[in-house]
Length: 122
Image (tube, rainbow, N blue to C red; front, side, top):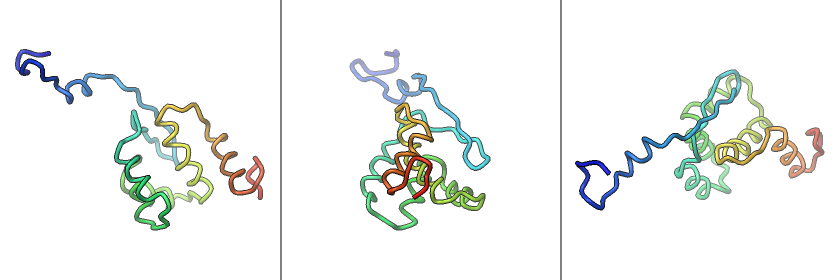
């Protein structure tokens, strides 16, 4: 506790600023992207609200929270396909949350859920 902090009051902002939280980088459609050090609360809250939504704005908002507001537009312009997007959207929150999961494992899970085999063929 610093001298300028009233006794019994802790500085939340200073605590989190001083705490070292590692980040990871990955390459998505040719650009290096730094993943947040932890899953943003805003992402979790928005994901619950729009869980069954099919509106493009809702999906774009979720992607924007993790990767920046224009990420989805850039990636689609650079050729990202639906399968790649589904894998990324399933993998990223888990990777950010520290779950040991690979892109290949997520792709296999999605293929199985969609009724295909591990190779991605239906």
